[in-house]
Length: 174
Image (cartoon, rainbow, N blue to C red):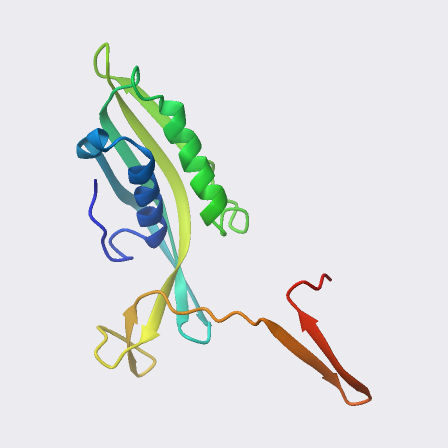
């Protein structure tokens, strides 16, 4: 299995999918499994998220390669379905950015094994939080590349000068 790296080396999304595949494939396959990113493109789009900034987006192709995959003992479709399941559960950007569907390539090695390669287009925000010892210098401050805490409102009160307060809770619909 590939080691966990920093976001610019191997995106958080790639790391999450890598972890999912390591949890859903037999451990004996892990020594023949690698992942990396290719075709990285950066987009500058700074956005203050309260506890940190999205400085932009990183779009890339995540490549997962299983060598010596024993297709007679482990169904390759199980890996494929686990990838789709993880994307459905975790990839909030797929539809918004109209990302390409994952692709799989299976190449025979011998009568019992194949090389199975999966490519998934991913995009994720490059997140920074302020840190006096950070290695990123931006807008006159120091920052680190790390996920920030997201605060979620549990309820709000809408106040109109002519009407009494009106509580809005998470269960309210449009």
